[in-house]
Image (cartoon, rainbow, N blue to C red; front, side):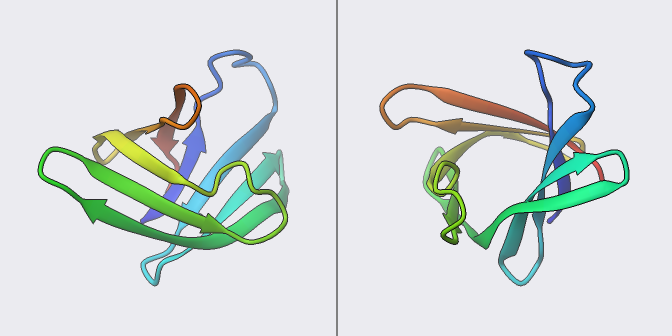
Amino acid sequence: VGVWEIVDVMDPADTIKERWAFESNGNMAALSVDGAIVTEINSGLWSIDQKMRTANLNIVFGTKLSGYGSIWEIAELDKNEMILILKEGGLYIKEFKKVQ
């Protein structure tokens, strides 16, 4: 729960940041942040599925963009950092830092 910003390892100087906002009621939004301008990229629902050794973040987004709606493995999660791994047709990793 909270707002998490994607760590841009390819272009750290980029002024446009992407944030994912998770609400306790299961709603979430992907946001583009450019200074004071915040634009919603997509919105949807999230849940966590805990297995024996892994926890998965299930995301179902609306119809704006379908690229993020999937099942992400939670590789690391603490109060300040989250790392998600998508294993569909390859390996896609997103690293986040906690904003709020």
